[in-house]
Amino acid sequence: MRRPRAAPRATGLTLGLAVALGCAVEATAAAQAPDPAALVGGESHCPTPAAVWQKLVPLVPGDLLVDRLRVAGGPAPPIQVIDLGTSFLVTAGHRVREYPEPARDCGERARFAALFIAIATGADPASVGAPAVPPARPEAVTAVAAPPGDGPRQPRLRLDVGASAAATLGGGGATIAPGLAVRSGFGAGRLVPVAALAVVGPADGNAGGVDIREWQGTADLDLRSAFRSIGAFRAYVELGAVLEVISDRPTNLAAAQSQLSYAVGPRAAVGVLMGTHARMSPFLLVHGAWFPRAPERFALPAGDLGRAAPWNIGATGGVSWGLR
Amino acid sequence: MDLGSNVLWASTFEGGTFGEWTGVQGGGANASPTPPNTIAVSTNYAHHGRYAAELTIDAGPDGTQENAGLNRKGGLPVEAYYSAWYYLPRTIAVGTFWILFKFRLRTDANDSNTENEFYDLELTNAADGSLTLLLYDHQSGADVPIVSPAPVVPVSVWFQIEAFYRNAQDDSGRLTIWLDGRMVVDVTGQPMAPTPWVEWDAVNVGENLTPSTAVVAIDDCAVSLSRVGPAGVIAE
Image (cartoon, rainbow over all chains, first blue to last red; front, side, top):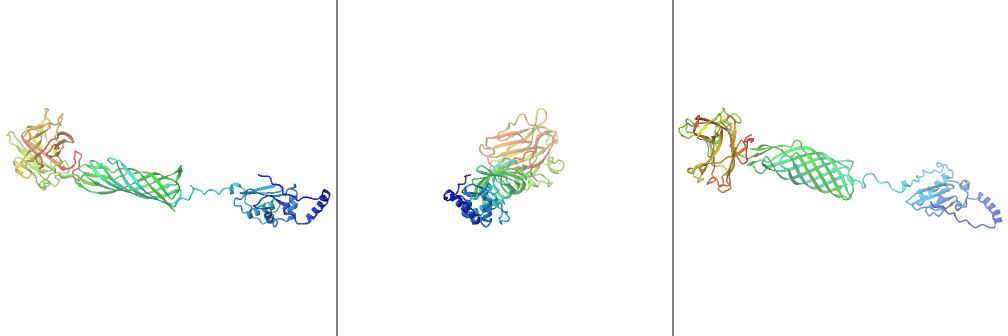
């Protein structure tokens, strides 16, 4: 903190005359209005000492102010105002206060300084009709508190559209097939409900010597966790349930019948959004589902061909839109 | 999910008649000469359900061929699986021959007068008197080698005979035979019949058997595009 510089004083007369006259001047001064320049000094431009004096006079009578500040002694004005840029310093006698005020509202600065001076010189804060002086805590004004959460406000609706590759395990030979998926997340809380639809196929497989071409449609409901930033990525987890509808058609039977069946099971997924917090971001989702009661398949003469695949795993990649 | 079937035709005899055989073109069920030989649907034996075909011949030492059989003449694919379940109540000493399963041919597919014998799957006695299989090729006039050790044909137990027959006129022709799912003979890499015409018979045909009366029960017959096997289901 810079030491306040003494305000320039007017040059005096000869010593004796100065003493005599000084006493006379003092006596006169005691009877006259106080000199603002003698009371309020400093090189501040915002607020200026004059502006502070203008705000101070209505709060504290000048003679009272002189009486209370005279004990401070010294050649410099007992009240000093110093402009520190984003803050300003006020000294009143032996009391000092620094106010952070980056907005540089000079009028407000003058008012705050006057209030401090009035209270520092013994005035009852209630009597000066002053509202509570804002606390001079640097942290209160040096920075605006960051809003809670992960940066900018999260969109309330997120739409993911992408291409899938899904594999079935069990139920005969493993198969893999392409597909399309659409996923929607509703809300922006810690847990976001998600609804999704997907179509995968065709997948060509074999069960019990019967070649089967299969299409799969799924509808799932999940809860998605809040995004967690990991470097340039934002990761999330989904847990829920999925309904699959399967269409199977044998391709090497003399008498072939297409059949629809369905199964329900739990689903889990882990995903990442890539890039910045832009409205559109690429995403990648790895997911798996288990169907404990996958439908059974039958064809003559083999008879029971076993159950359809109970395990589905896959990955979906595409674009995620944050719709506000 | 019932995805369909590869079984082109099946016979379980559960209607109590031979209608499954006689109701298709070229199909038949007959015994010759009658008497003493008979063919009937009965409840004395059954692999599944209540009924099976019961074929009885009396093949004494007089050297006369006795016949009872179920046949499908023509209308069969060039390549297919043929299967039937058999039951032999007792062991018999085979004097000349005892045939259960046949393929026949035509040298002119459109002329029934050109029909002739092709492959006979027969029963014969092993050294210990048990029954085993033998495949006779009428075209070459010789027995076709079967697996070693030779399979034992069970008595008083149902057993399945299944054949894959690709009646190709080039080297892709093939005849493979299984007994209760075990392959016993595989003729491959040679032409089969001179024409694509196929006849398949499930029979009880014998000559010089001891004792002379031989009963063979037959059930769950099928013609399929895929192998049935012992665990296969041919009807629901």
